[in-house]
Image (cartoon, rainbow, N blue to C red):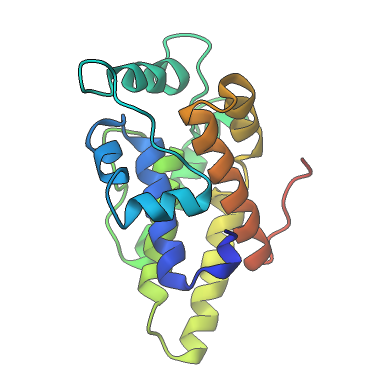
Length: 199
């Protein structure tokens, strides 16, 4: 299902779910994904919930998460400044702080990861959409512009990361997370009239 079929609250919920999938080792989140209403929503997006390991945990997925996104080598850090400038960059962090101040929420959401981690950026976008719900028409237009600016500055960099994860993981769990994220963000770019990099 395309995000263009979702209302603002549903889009905010998808951003929040994707934020957690990128920012956290699987653990309890996968148990929540096995239950309704998250199970159906995740399936509608094209995701699946993997089976538990023989010991009843998701420790092999925890290992996959660390191998793919944490390191120590040949990992794919989901960090904007690394993919944009090749190193950790305070300019990106400063921009995130400005948005957080304008929107009025604490930053970053997950202090265990750096501010321009994809998980924190997806979470910030969910908060921007939540704060704009229920506004008057003029204020909604301003909120739409803010969402568009945030997306352009902090979510329009992900194509290379997501393609690399998909290439490495295929139809495994994190390959699917990357595919769902890619499709959702492409739909959102269209909705927000943000030009996307060529595929």
